[in-house]
Image (cartoon, rainbow, N blue to C red):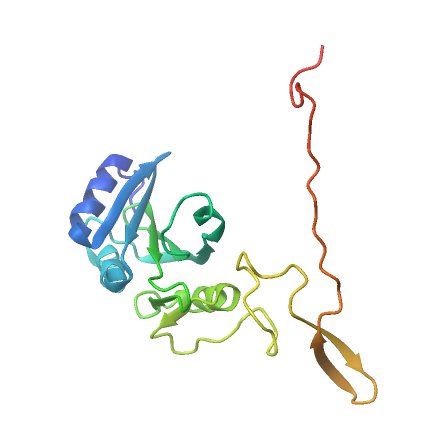
Amino acid sequence: MSDVAIHPEALRDAVALTLGDKALNVSLAKDELTVVVAPEVYLEAMELLRDAPQCRFEQLIDLCGVDYSTYREVGTDGPRYAVVSHLLSVSLNQRVRVKVFCADDDLPVVPSVTGVWSGANWFEREAFDLYGIVFDGHSDLRRILTDYGFIGHPFRKDFPLSGHVEMRYDPELRRVVYEPVTIEPREITPRIIREEDYGGLHG
């Protein structure tokens, strides 16, 4: 393992050179490198990041889904769902964040990277469970955190706080049953701070 990490600008240039036109964007903020790739080249780009001599990202250390619906309401019109991965090169002591947006909001799909890093297995199942993102090529894509009878994807921004179903033990049936939620939805009004010097120093 290298004790000295490559300079962030040099890493940015190396990753940009490796990916070429497969990268939609390569940006550096606070010494952290983020790469955006299109879904149709996502798998190929990830293999390059793993195998290229100047990259050698041997480990996938995290993968998660993101729902950008709230951001889109304030002016952006891009895709709603994204998958974000964090890769680590142990041998070169460097990291990169890779973001891919799903092309279809109604059926968000990206290729699975379990064939590149086997550790992506449970991460992708979690993103499928919580966001409804489908990972094409995953060998066992099923829910991992919610129950078998669960309806919907709880990390989506439009998922109701009360959920869709509730469960209870039925003594007559002698088993757990699922029923529509009986909780009345309520609107929570945020407290508004009106003091002009709120948060400032008081003499």
